[in-house]
Structures are given as C-alpha cells and as structure tokens.
Length: 278
Picture 1 (spheres, rainbow, N blue to C red):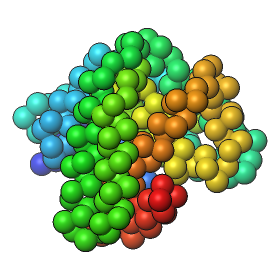
Picture 2: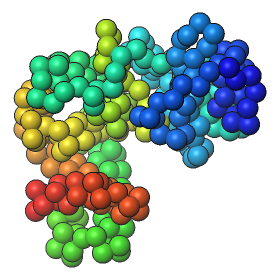
Picture 3: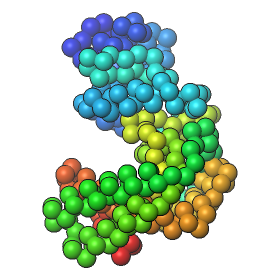
Picture 4: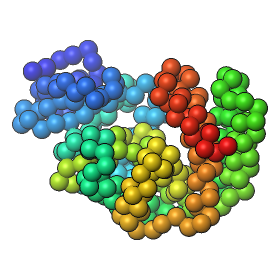
C-alpha cells in the first residue's frame, strides 16, 4: 500500500482514490503508472512533460470523450501544477497483442473503424481549404528539418514539396481526429475501446487513416476492408489519391523523429514510405 509519495502521480491517485497500490506494467511508458484502489479497480495516472500536450489531452477527455462514452477512459482527477491526469482503466488487452493474420485481427479493425466513425460523424465539418493549407505548412516544416539533417536527398525533398503543393490546394472534410489511431492505442475486450488522447485535435478526417494505411494496410489489405466496413464509408477516388500526400507527412515525420529519438525502426519505416512515394 502507498499512502504518500514524492511522485505527483501517486499523490494525485491517493487524493482521489484513497490508498492505492502501484502495479508493474512493462507495456507502459515511464510517465504512466497503473494503480489499483482498495476495491481492486485499475486506474492509470499520466504525467506530461509538455504543458501544451497536458492541456490538449485534458480538453480532449473533458470535451470529445463524451462521444466515446463507454469506449474510452474517464477522466476522474487532474493536477494542473504537475500536468498529471488520473483515468479509469479499460478492461481487455491492447490491440497490438492480437495475433496477426487471425480473424480476431480483422474484428479489431472492424470495431476500430466503427468507433472512429462515431467520433468523426459527431464532429464533422464541411470541406474547406484551411485544413489543407495547415497540413502543407507542417509538411514543409518536417521536410526542411529532414533536409537540414541530411536525412533526404534534394530529389526526395522535391517529391515531398510536390505533395505539400497538393495539400495546399485541397479542400477536405475536417473532424476531431485521434491522430495516433493504431492497435497499440486500442483496448480489446468485451467492449472495444481507445485511449491516449494527447494528440487529439480537429484535422483532416482522412489523416486518421494514414498511420494504419502506411503501417498496416498496405501489407494486409483485408484489414483496410474490415476497417471501412465498420467505419461505414469508404474513401472516394480523390481521398484515396490524397492519401499519398498524407504518406509524405508520415515519411517526413518518421524520418525526423526516428533520427532525433535514435529509433532505427522508425527511420526504416520513414525511408520505406518515402521510397513508395518516389
């Protein structure tokens, strides 16, 4: 049992739940801890190092989490001084533990599509040019960082710049997007759930598909089919062509983050996506 601690995460949990016990969980990043209360119920406590991300995730759970009630953690405590939030734990196992090439993997993607469709339909706004222009600006920024770090050639920079032009001139539906929508952030149990809202914001609707497209679906098209069957709406021809430009964002960000974080897997992924674009 833990009554007091110099860890603000445990302090917050004790303030809200009473005595708690920390539970080792090797799947969690260092800034997140799992605890149980006296009744044995599980919770997560997450401390942000970036105040903007803390504010974004807090806003997401308090505002857009309503659309996912019963399928997302509930925010039950916060501590602004330490940028810490306390969340209920979803029952089940993470989506990235589902055996690959199994019927359960297709079912996970179907349920993931269905749940994302609920969020997108509840927050959808009609087509506009502002979203595309913002994405083009982001892509140009990532491209410049990649070029200055000598991660891409001048020809590859030109390819990415061409995709920025496409984004800049495109009108797209926008919706509140999760922006890290992939199996590691899905919880599979009696009820399908999703967590980790720190990136969530309004963005181009189809951007929520890009990570799955370039990290999962191209190697397993049946998962794409299952996802959109659950989502209830397939990409049209224009949106499918735009997906290549979202691949440019995926490639540039993966290269820069992989380089900065010394992550060879992310670097390899970024180079593979960039090669497909070229």
